[in-house]
Image (tube, rainbow, N blue to C red; front, top):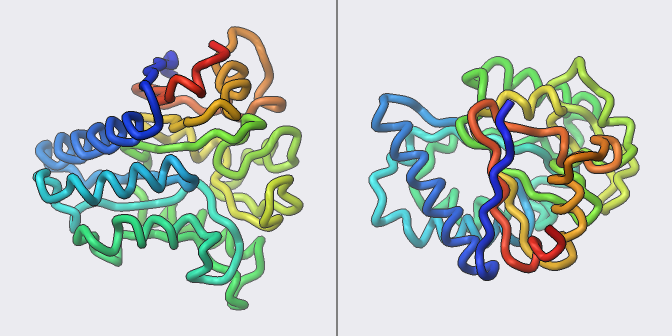
Length: 242
């Protein structure tokens, strides 16, 4: 697995713009080589800013959005269309505006009554097995102030699940309590992993995630690295304890 690289930006706006540029470049390169890139999306305020920057810059890129496949690293198990869902925010910010093929947008199941939480997690795992390419070209992950990634929280039983692609997360320490998350083993199937982190409240988690010593149980962000590269894209506030 790759050694983490850290790139610090002056502020959150500069950070979001650079990540958007990097994503567009990665998509262009993959498609130029004949590939259909598979991208793992995340939620949160910095991801939303990145998505809006992608939409703003999309007109100047050569990306064929009908040939990009989107997945999520985690999702809140709430009704479809809820503003709490990562997919709702991503659709509003860019997926519904840039020409993405709806059939290539793989949302995690919503809590609309068809599936309970365990069945929903199992269904998403099966969907990724059947329709995924075997690895994300780029997986983007936020990091919480407690060091969690996706919906894998410090000390939570979901950290220890190794035989599933996606796991049901109950009693999340951050609301809403019911979630679906890819497991560490699934997240590891990523060529590039990008951690997107902004804000002074995340500084301790960034320092713990990059420290020479520490446990995945205490800081889950330590448990994910890309096969080819792992990049922490952070602003100066998030880097303040490095």
